[in-house]
Amino acid sequence: MEANTNMRETATLGSGCFWCVEAVMQSLRGVERVESGYSGGTVTDPTYREVCHGRTGHAEVVQITFDPAEISFRDLLFIFFSTHDPTTLNSQGADVGTQYRSVVFYHDDAQRTTAEAVIAELDEENVFGGTIVTELAPLDVFYPAEDYHQDYFLNNPEKPYCQAIIAPKVARLRKQYLGKLKAA
Image 1 (cartoon, rainbow, N blue to C red):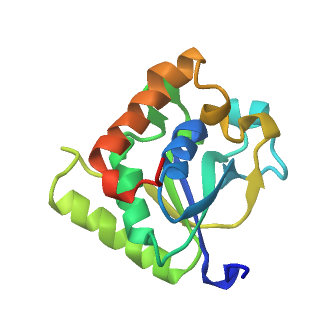
Image 2 (cartoon, rainbow, N blue to C red; image 1 turned 135 degrees about the vertical axis):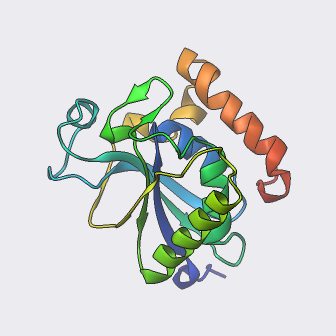
């Protein structure tokens, strides 16, 4: 019997390099597809090179297709926030520029409301020791990134960036959210 794809939702999130967000989200139970790409800019069909130069206005993001019966948008947001620093404006570590901003591109009013509530809760609890500066914006267009960016960590685990930056985030995810992970 074919799965009912009508019950799927989509989230679009950015927290710096899309390879990191992709690796984290691919590990979660209920997440069916993660695609790296670009959103939030003014250039049609931007390339990685154009986005990296910071002149398109786009952020590196991932678009996540998930089953809300297995993982909620709220849970995705808590995991998203726990795997980057949402208090730094337009940067994550050595990655600096608006293309590396922390952003939630919401798909509907329910996602906007949920994101606002999660941010307010995390700020109220002072989880990060600073105010969350994550941008909330309606999704306009999502442009898929070039093929070599897709499944980057899965295809390149030996690369220095993957070892130094992505692997620790995935390890932290496994430790913190073991109950939310796909079976190995």
